[in-house]
Amino acid sequence: MVVRTSLRRRLRRADARVIIGIVLVLISIAGVWSVVSAARQTSTVLSAARTIVVGEPVEADDLRVVEVALGAADEIYAAPGTLEPGAVAARTIPAGELVPRGAVASPDQLAATTIVVQTTNAVPGSVSAGTRVEVWSAAERERGVFADPRILVADATVRALQSSDGLVAQQRSAAVELVVPRADVGALLAAIGAGDALSVIPAAGGDR
Image (cartoon, rainbow, N blue to C red):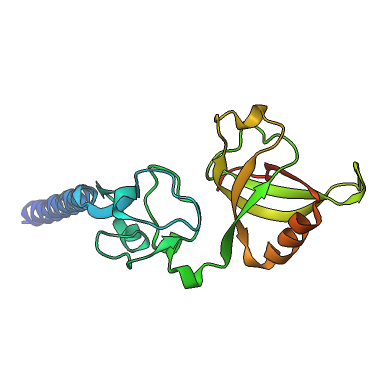
């Protein structure tokens, strides 16, 4: 009798272990399935087909529709049909980057404007559309004599380089179309009007 009771207890313990093992295996399978299922779910969002410089209109030709797995980040990026007509880039969006909703705004929300600056010196070859730059100014004390240069605009973005032959870096000067914070517009226009020597150089940190 004692032997049978002991055997039954061992069988119950064995059965409990088997059941627990089966439950753990099922939980593991469910977890793996959930992960795989989530990885297969993709979202339709917009990607920049070219570099869109801050202040530029964001148009259909500038965008591509792509399918990507974003998970919880789905709401961060702009989807087809979500951009307002006339929207502009609130910051430079490099080619191939998914377009964040916060990188697009209406023109009224953009605290910047475009100004063309004629530089006194050659523009570095590393400067191109989308490059963050600094504008340096040196006031002319007398004809051909200039004061020490100082930073006039600490953070501008190149929208375009205007050059007849494209060899901007080899020219003595160049016309550079810049997107400038509105707070710096007055000082920049005053420097241009006064005939100050203006230079455009890459800003610390490079492109956005």
